[in-house]
Image (cartoon, rainbow, N blue to C red; front, side, top):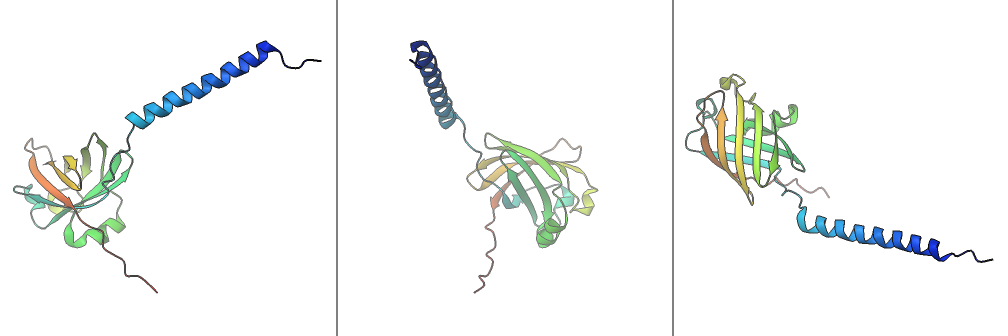
Length: 158
């Protein structure tokens, strides 16, 4: 009895070759065109000539948390950064597309801002942000730059 028919072998051989070719094409496309966004999570100390008045009282730090292209963060005064970041959930939401950050939300860490809406747009180059910040309904955007701060080292326990 002959269990192997030529038509069956040809069909299964063609199906296997088609799957291998499709896998090769999809893998080549993904390798050439799909790139993960750069890791930008961390703290950035804002440096600006003209920050909005309610943000000028102290050094301003932008903390960013990242999950792929999705961002969340907080705009906080520097001395209380650790305490407030640990106690509150991020007040800014946004994304990272083509090295461009867009964040929007509230600034509860600055009582003088009356929980105004803030919008941050910045370009990412290595570990530096350069962009503009708009507070409230004012159409005037203030330019800023921010360098990523290195994370503080935890002392090693022996």
